Image (cartoon, rainbow, N blue to C red; front, side):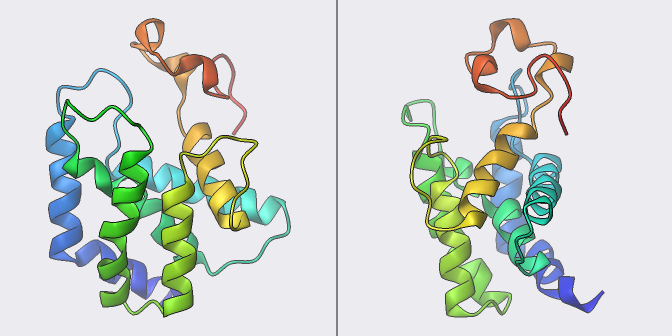
Length: 168
């Protein structure tokens, strides 16, 4: 499938692997939801489904790039970081050179980095694109809270759509 070649370039990037490894290392003892590769792939697939269900057309590798890169900024977080949205902005910044290296055009990079930067916005806020909105939605729907052993202690469980039943 030639149309996913840019995704494969991203996945093989040593910088991407380094960022992802740092995220996974920081979260190795985390009891709540993690933000590694499996989460990003779930977000990618859900975002793709949401866009298709709404009759919206984006290149698949653009959608997957946004999802695969949306939490990379967590590699720079430490315990002193309080603002949850900060990782979204850091992720967008880290994504730009990775996208350029993988051959995404300037307009594609802008679309993807805007979506990444906006994925922590509230449901009722204004988004720059459908991709931004559905990336945020996919991020929320990717969490299967009803099956989580840490759900009782989770501070985010009440805002998660799949906290008590499977929707997607």
